[in-house]
Length: 114
Image (cartoon, rainbow, N blue to C red; front, top):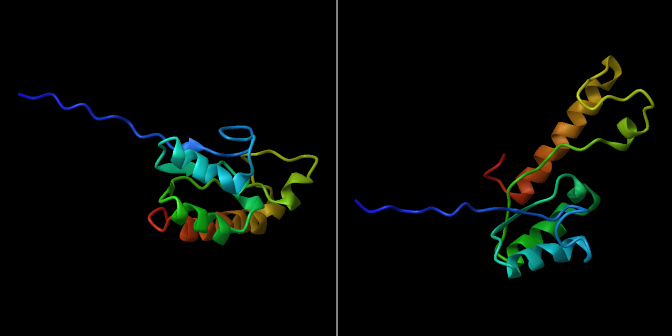
C-alpha cells in the first residue's frame, strides 16, 4: 500500500495589510503568482477597484480568485450605532445591495463561486 501525501493549497490574501501590501493592489496578483500561489483572495479590498481590471490581472497571471466577502457599504459605515452582525429594520435594502455586489464580483472574478 502506497501512502500519498497531498499538499494543501493556500490562497494569497492580497488585501490591504496582508501579503504584498507594499505594492499596488493590482500588481499583487502577479507577485503572488511569481511566488507560486495559484489563487488569491482579499477580504474586501477588491471593492476599491474595477472588477474587470482585477479579472484582467487574474487572466494575465493564470490565477484564480477564491473568496469574495460582502463589504460594508459607505451608507452602513457612517452609522454610529452599527453592529456588524445585525440588520436593523432600515437596513434591509443595504443588506441586499451588499450581497448583490459580492455576487456580481464573484460572477466576474470566478464563476465557479457563484
